[in-house]
Length: 241
Image (tube, rainbow, N blue to C red; front, side, top):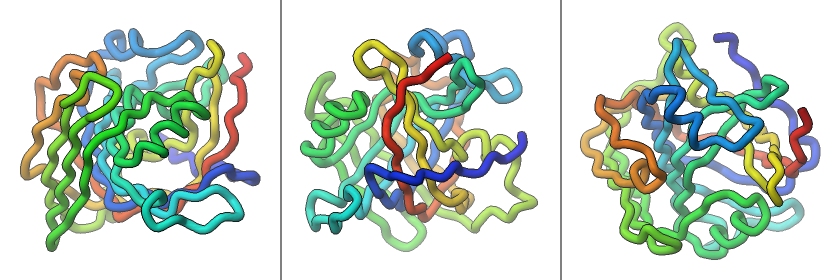
């Protein structure tokens, strides 16, 4: 796969810092994942397989242009269930099956503006040495009690020679898709290339994939981690074929 760099977002509507992120991915049959997608999107595959990612991380410095980050509102954990898609023009991007966040105002705002399937959850991200601990219990809306508890041991950074095409396929995505008023819409996301580390799951108990309607994974996941990137989010635009 040829690495495609981030596009430039000249007029961001939000700034973020995505920190202490772990990418946990499983292979799924493409036809199964396609059933979750709206008209106008096709599941993107790597060597014949679709992938679904579980990505817990810490959202920091969340703010609109012209305002500083607020101490409580601008910092919270998040865990996403996502897959990889292309639109009719061949543009690759992300489709979110769910997004759990630890701040109710952020959940309400994202649901109202970007129409993303956010959920309010009791969450934490903590670390000690090379260990990262992610905790998530869904509160609202249902199904309440869906959870993701992950313990991750961080390893050495991946060198360029060690970084394969699959890693870039999974993490280097600079566009999100959503549906607004029955129409497919998209927004660009600008950030540097992810600095990736090796990572190992020391423990995982999760029900977020099943809560999204997916069958439980039947094999071990592929795991990467990153200290994070600075992010600029662009405005939503309708997708035209």
